[in-house]
Length: 401
Ligand SMILES: *Cc1c(COP(=O)(O)O)cnc(C)c1O
Image (cartoon, rainbow, N blue to C red):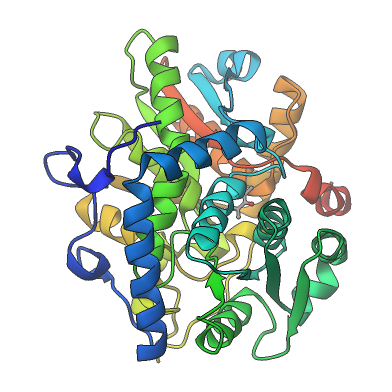
């Protein structure tokens, strides 16, 4: 792991995926749209993270946690049988093999370590289906912190097992009864709660969303995915860099972090969204949860709810850096349907012996479609991040198949 501060390192000529401009701006997106009490807390997180990220001691401690607790580095797996059938060369970056089964652990271990460094004794988090809540509860237990997780009442009913898992890990799960009683409302409630608890609590955001510095900080904490993959591709591919780099996009953390490893190369970057949660593909500029980005909205500017069989893609917006990458044309955003994702999950299970998370199956569904319609020319090399394992989705799949 590099141990110099990221904002002093060379960034691509156009600066894409380097440090955001002043006040956390990615082009016209990003920023810090919060009440003053939270702006102050965000400034403290920003300062603490910049110091930590420039400190080899912090980087070393995090690298060790990622190695001995989370199981990094994760392998790059060539998908032999599926590649042959599709006529492309597909490589999978295996975040499904991390502890807790998805890339979310990279971010929460980093933020939990930062929280202890800041003298905080509690983590606050929002969660939709419970994946980020479970990861936060895990990191809190490991580092001796308390965890309070806000979760919509409807999600609590739908995800009873993950609620139990968080309580098993010692976390407090707080039901949110406002609005649609799902992730959007849980996020608003977690932020409101943080206002009164900034002195002893750190708000652990789960993706590259929220007020500055979160989109940038979470991307940096997850950057390890793209950096490992870059090195693995250099060793594995004759060309060193894949022709295409593909990942699914909910808030956009696993995609941003994979892209970050390849932003300065000729690789084409493709973010795959759920048809019903396509913030980057179909969103319009707006402000929610502390930042300006692209959100699904009706004509009055009201946020419209997202729908996806993949809980992690069920968010009506996208991180500000993705909005910027879209505007720049550096990354392309596409959508796939629930049905395509489910078919892709079955296909990966039966050709490679891997049951993917439904979120990750979206990325694969695009690869399968694009290999079929020539969007991915025959013989192309494709790196795809497999963001998580499918155990959590087995009951959904069982009902649908
Ligand atoms: C949460 C989650 C996602 C979506 O989050 P991003 O921030 O877009 O990466 C994707 N895959 C899995 C397995 C998840 O748990």
